[in-house]
Length: 601
Image (cartoon, rainbow, N blue to C red):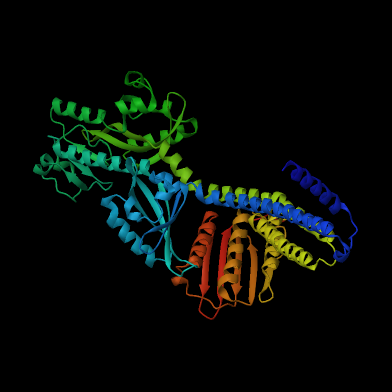
């Protein structure tokens, strides 16, 4: 055994030295001895083993690149599901499995209804029915079951597509956990319901009025005094009372009749237990009282707050505005609720929703009550959600650029090295060994195709022209690459070679790229015209083809999904995408985007 291993290593060394020689030796098998012929066959066997090893490494590298693409789907920030017509799950990513609290293998081929709370089954049924008939994304909120944990609220975005493999309709769903925000909304509603119930339980006359002072809700004591729903709240409807209105919880304006000290004490208790900060101040803005929520919100105890002015809570740039508001309220002007800034004791700046209410006694405004709600977290969440599409696109482009670099610098170079190896190996073969030469020629041809496809894919993922020479040259290059023997593509623009719109460039490029791909796949067009026009503050991209056309109102396939994505991309940069198409008359896709007017030097 050891002797055979030594002999094999010696033969491999001879093979390596043999391949390094440039001349092509001519071997006449008829002149060889049987031992020599066996040795040559053994050498060829080792050569093939070495080539097979190189091909195996190339395949492993290709599988590694494919795995990176899979990560984009599996580890997306939202869960992805694909349902058959019978609502059976046929595809799911790891995020979906994590959100549902099960292994991915336990999701496949199960009914999606298995993961939906029984109370929301009807909502899912009507949602899926609507999706199958719709041409755009549809959304709904469901409560989903999570293994070994409490159910959670999820936002579903769904769209029906036609599978290219079997022609059947599938539904693609993306869903995310909105449990915290949904529970917050429910809590606010419950708080409002409790306030309405509290209003009806008050022994004194109390009414809820809208901004026009029409009565929305009146308790029994108020109705006994002649208050009617829907009618304006007039002074003669209520007995004399020191406070015209005070805001509590989520009620807009609550009018109270206070006839006794006990009732006044009950009113103070209600305000003190409010979920909003309530502050009572004089007409100059000096704080006279505030409740427990105000202490928690701003960090000042009530004993310390009564020595302060409201201007101590207002940022410097808003002091003049606050002074003007106090003057208007003192003059009897009704100020609608609005958002502003306040400064807490620790120096943090809060976003506050503010509502002023006039306190009237003997027909005169004697004080001002403000009800304030901290909406800082809400605004931060809203801003984050507003910026989420842009961040997703930026992340996608960064990942595409990284993958493109990997394809070019790692995978591409490995393929080129493998091609050179086959060239050297083929040149070292005897001329009469036609079988092996033919095999190597086919391998080289296949490698050339793989190298070309890899370069094309890397270019599509991250177009270098867009980064280094600008939008218009990149569009020219894209148009040229789209032309084939059966498709002519022409590009026209109004002398804007150096036009660039920063972060908008990549979205414009992707929209055009998707449009040309749709034309190649679906339209059967022979001519395409791409126009770019820039007039002052408007950028216009128009793509017209002479294809078979289609009915835009019936796009429910993957093509419809592509159009919907293009519309979303245009909306991210405040643009508008429109489509005009008729069967047999071609299609016109038009994108208009607002831009800043460039100054002419």
